[in-house]
Length: 320
Ligand code: SF4
Image 1 (cartoon, rainbow, N blue to C red):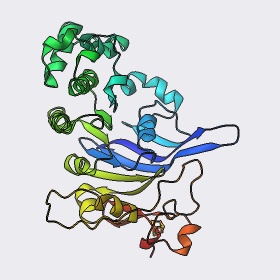
Image 2: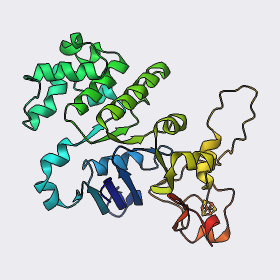
Image 3: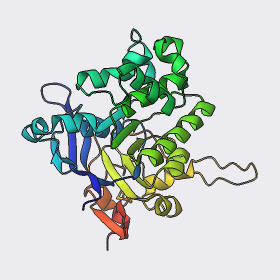
Image 4: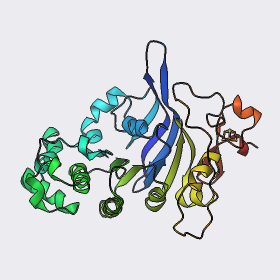
């Protein structure tokens, strides 16, 4: 158990929509992250990926479930208070949209130094400016950008600045919530390469959220597939991409473009759109779109089963 950095058990989060209505954005999600691992979380918009990231970062308080980080139950206010500094420094997040996650009035130097100031951390390179210059170099930017403000930077430079800000806290866990979704394709490749280099250099652990399956296959060691607040399949990246089990995973993967114009794609087209999490279908939440739907799928929610070592699926097709 020593190499488990993050242990998420039965994580549930409901948003209140009104007096009698709730939206169950996460519904009993469980997974573990080992140290140095990159865990890719995929799924359509509205599947609960970002809500999971926000609960893990204590931006949202879970309605139920447990999140243990380095053995600390981060959902317990008492434990959170006693380990506040550890929890607020060694876990960092990179948001999708650097335009809104960076303050346009601050300089790059101020942005990178701000967390150190807030947490009263003495900069290891003498001054806050020297520390910011060092972190900027680590993410491949010229220290000449230190006095620029976010609107003067390109999209790629802004995202590098956001990564530098996170790195300045010497994190162990980096939660990257769609870090390349708002970038051009050529810049996306640069940011992915940078994240991989940093992961190897600093032995970081990533929770990497994306809807780009090719990128997730490229970067991740393990993959979790989310649908309507549930983790429907979870396992080693090679196993999941070679042998997807859940009908939803199969449909998602069938849409990955093949870089060969002569190759025939056997695309599985899903009918309709993802149902509202405020009013999810009974039984298996995927049954309204599943080509393999059976009668019991409409009434009975499937349980998680381990089909091969470390490869889990939630589907009645695999009931014994
Ligand atoms: Fe399809 Fe039934 Fe499996 Fe749900 S449980 S994914 S409806 S086969």
